[in-house]
Image (cartoon, rainbow, N blue to C red; front, side, top):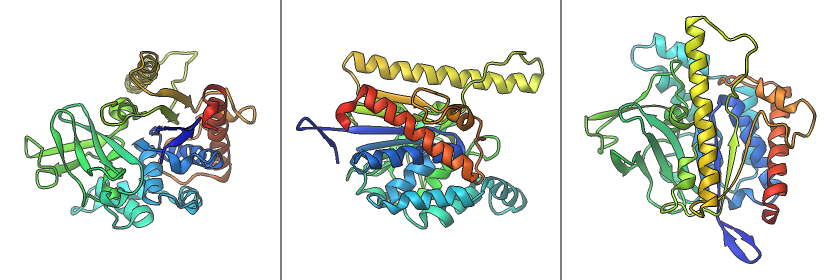
Length: 335
């Protein structure tokens, strides 16, 4: 892969945030703009969280196939999985809501493909959160390198035969709608206590930035971050209700992590310890194609339900506009 800049090969990484089907549709717009720029199939690394894992894993599983973008669009326009998965998992004693989520991904997106099927594409991280250690837990494949799962503290294990659908389900298991994925020691031998439980990658970092900065493993020259997560909304009247206070507190914590991760990218690049960062968030108006796109896109709900035609249209257009602005302004050499 790689991109040639003035005759020198450069490596580009792309981080895809969480945010349900809204994020997947937003990232699809990013894919389309990269395709127009002749950059999509030259991406060297994908790091994905939650809704970003849906889009990123599907892209990697169909690497080099332009028609995959239209098929992903069709999926987001016609499928709703959250409610059905939750109900079936709650009523069936032999399965869980998380199992049903994985089953829908298997049926509609990935079939029986395992992580080893991603070997010929870019390096891809599908990120979850280890509930025991609080660390990012990754499923990683591609770039003709070892296919693994694990984390820096507990260690890694081979994951060639691990289903893609199950990895994506772990990455997008938003609590409390979906329970964590339980991995026994027969699936993840590095588990010190016999098993681990994994929840949505957005709990640890909804941007999936960490793999972009692992210079010893992923030596990148550019890092594009597509952020379709829920922006923090400033309220005119602060809440006092207990349950809402908890919800807003979580929002504040996530906003702090978002800001710190962007700062990490900036400082790493300025100290020549990381790639040149190009990031954009869904609520940004810098580069929006039509006035109001940022507000409209930000207000699309972050669930796992099919999106309306207008929502898909604006999310696609807004993502393309923001990416185009960032590349033409800060990295025109990539064009």
